[in-house]
Image (cartoon, rainbow, N blue to C red; front, side):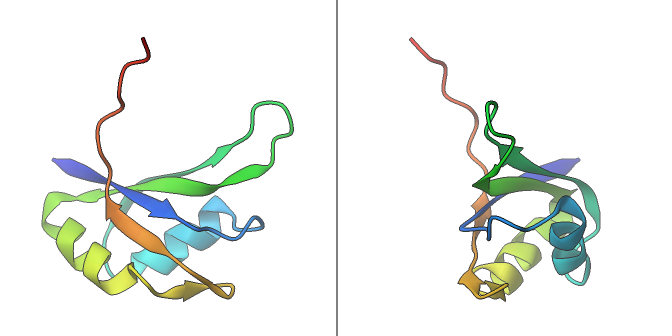
Length: 85
């Protein structure tokens, strides 16, 4: 199984390749996506990393609060999407 991690406070210029490389030292990254604005295509400053269950806690502990391009990352386990009413 895999767990999805939320990664917040990303620099606007971060690419999915850079984010994957940052996490690769701590976990096997299955997928990575940075959320972008639909209209402008610009990063919204957060993304999601999918890792193996056994790597999730280690990746959160290792990466939460670390700096990427001068910004402190916020990393935690992603919560399920809430339905819109």
